[in-house]
Image (cartoon, rainbow, N blue to C red; front, side, top):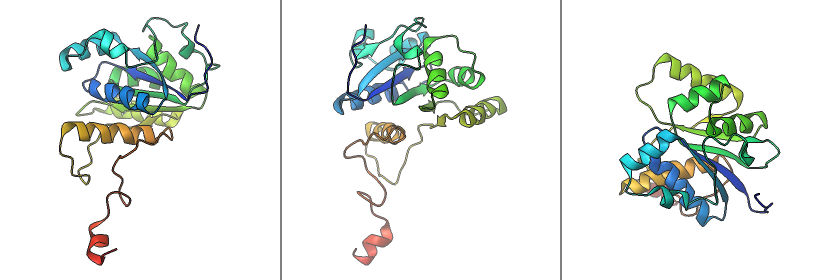
Length: 203
């Protein structure tokens, strides 16, 4: 049984879309910020790990405080009485999006997302798919109307990124903003990044 904690908790879901690096970096950043993480990975997500990284299953699981089996619908995160900040799904497949939008959940990942919505907590879906057909767009709208935040990992080039890692970290940092989690040293417009007009004025 998981012991109560005063640390903030966040559920991290990893589904089968390309871009597992977003979930990995989220777990690494959250650990550095002392946020307790509860990880649930779909079977397709485990396949993506094998395709896109050199990381073992054990290495990935070691990044989280608690790992819940995808079929364990009786896990703590399947209940609204288990208090969390909410849930980040990174990446979020269109199948997982569809289950969230329909409310018909088949795994712990989408059940946990459904619980977050019913408890009026933050659900952030880093949807990875392109191009999008009308069904995808309708599901995004439906999920948004239910309270989810659709947060595709869009790169920002005003930060003048020098590596893929910087692009990934910025997208993850922006997603974590939705939970009120501040990632130190993340470039921000008007703060660490000043508009060109400000430079020109010598401000």
